[in-house]
Image (cartoon, rainbow, N blue to C red; front, side, top):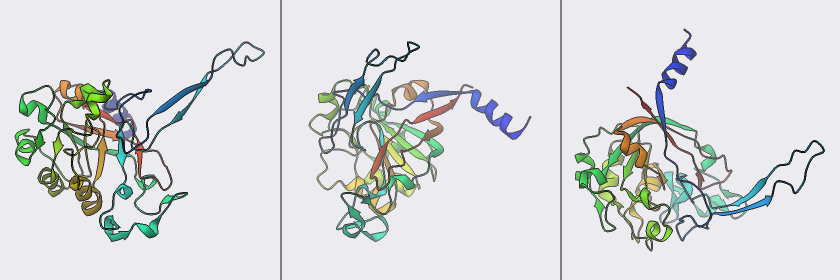
Length: 264
């Protein structure tokens, strides 16, 4: 067998788990970002080809940070500076977006992923609104986090996706504060994600975790994941696969993330 044949065989022995949430009209969205809008602008039968064929198509409108998505490093600045001490004011325009650390420069993610199931550690289906994820909780998962990993924190809030008011909860949700973020950054993760809209514990007036990851350490953030099927599988490490759209000047992008786990 060739190397490609071996690779295809190995992939064929894996189970794929979808980590993305569905898009639909009325879905949850952070109030700092626009909603998802959908409209069927051409129905079957509106135009019929001579052979009897017709097609349907829709129009979409959404923000780059709506639904399951990844943040580019240029999404945040602090005291006027983005990651690498890049001056934000001189590197942005309404028409062109950002000029540095943009989403179109983020290569497709094909990395080791790890699941840090904090809801399981706490013995609950979903963490309460005021639950702060601390380093001790991350340690208690028993999962080894390595440099270059995509570390995913499960709060259980992915179960609330079809209840927009509950999911957003006036932008009040569980998650890590700065100490837990520093625990992850000390281990050199490439990206960190969760099943909530803001990732970090919210309310967070200073957005300390976003600043630490995106501005200080150059770590991407992934939000609004669906981690329920992954948690049910029992897998704590897996292959994480996702690709952002190549939006020039973009501060983020929707993604369709997938976990590959061994059936054995």
